[in-house]
Image 1 (cartoon, chains in turn brown, purple):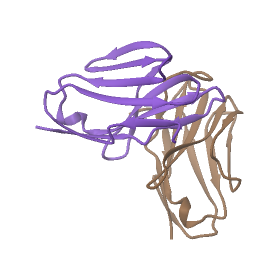
Image 2 (cartoon, helix red, strand yellow):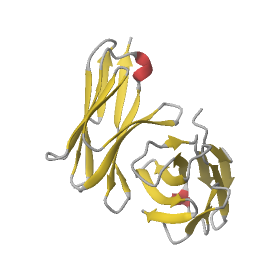
Image 3 (cartoon, helix red, strand yellow):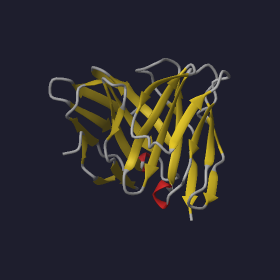
Length: 113
Length: 108
């Protein structure tokens, strides 16, 4: 058990819809990272938050947004969903701002019908 | 050319064999991570390296910054080591760039 909790585990929705994925980091960790893993593109880094502030942005679409709240949990919002957004979305946390081992959640599997 | 490449793409070994997975990157990095993804999908961070060598149990990771190359070694491999191994380079923009992964199967 990594200590990182992601909800929901599975999500099925339709094109054009909006969903929110939630991540609770390991106790004491200040950094939260979001990743997308699709069959055709592998793992991709989306965004990194540290103690509520955005630290780095990767291949995150404009239709996607994220935030980290004062209690350090984070949410990833995906809107105007397309079939290609079907993927496994992972959250990871670490203690520091960079160069620290990351602890991964079990992921949220998003299926767009 | 991808910024992070791995070889081999697939690897099948017999239990007990010594295994090496290679990772080459073309970007400047501040650290390199090795990840293990189990057949069920869960991801575990194995190592984070910025120089030299690290060892944990039967796993050893090395990095050569000048040659932009890292290797992950597994000694005395076991069927439970069967997984996809992914290297991820953390560039100076603090973005992670992932390799395509190496799928390892260890046969009993």
